[in-house]
Length: 485
Image (spheres, rainbow, N blue to C red):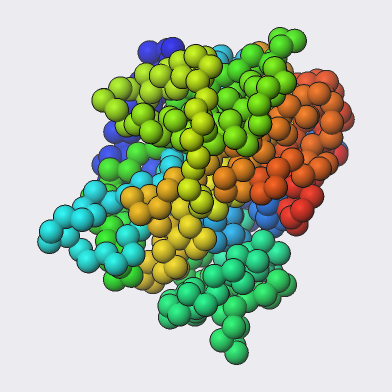
């Protein structure tokens, strides 16, 4: 149960985002970020980072090296992924994160900012939407997580993402692969073609330069004016107009109403004093992972079948859309479903792509996130002159399995796993967590056919012996994991 003080903080945050406010204080310049923001500690054990996209990993690593904590690094990585992997995590995307610091009750907190549909979709007289878009949730979700766990203003973690967009990135293997998968349909749109094609009209390939000048302007505006500007201010007006021109149908009222939530995570007792926290619904991949992990501890069943079956059963009974429960009540209902031993035997349709990352700092704070566009490159269109790729409306697509887990003993961090990989994402997180807690090196082997993981383990716990920490990114992809120094 949350304390009255924590409830007051959450209610105050919701009220703040519901009106036209800046969303964060005016930050220092990018130069001051590098030299004064956190107070560097040369030679210290700074932390461990793993993600599907190497350039985002280096952003997180740099934040840790400057003295930032795991929440600072995770927020910077989430915003950087909007630049480096817009096929799966643009500014139009959504997702969910788990955050934990030693001493947290209930295994930390979950921050849920899953994609949601515009409220006017299907209403007569509403803006035309031939490709309905999801309301952009990434910035608000990262802001809420960072507000509760970070050490600086949100604007001060943005210069890295701004620089990547303005100065250009090298197209990674993952982004190149996603472009190749959908290039025919993607490049049929003039806005997407202007950003993601070569001079000969073909899609960018691995190693090509990708410059996103308009996106850098959006990020700079958020840095200067605050996250609130994207949901209540001039940027909200530009984005909604761009969405309507691109057939996304979103209005400023959709942006104002889209508030992320802070929730209690789901829990499984892993024995030996360890508790594993999982993302709660509506990020119901966490429920699938929790069911599968518990079965793995008992040596029972197939993780893939159990994870999908439990989510299918949860969705069939209405998930957490029934009634008007508080977010804590909704999590309690999911925990009861988990504790009852229910699993179900249903199956899920082919699910959308996602991406994940995990970060741990030297003090044992950990953040693990999963992000999605509800489809590769979402709607395949850009929101006007913002440079933002519009995510696909969840009203038209099945929800992805967003899954992440963090293990702790109440006083120290032990392991974090975040997963992606369509229908196998939840099973992959469960299997990887079981393996790393049994002493195997993170991401040293493929755990499922399609599931991909980013994992960090500190066998002797943090705070404590940081030199024991190891990290891994799925060996079949070209992600990156960097450990403590």
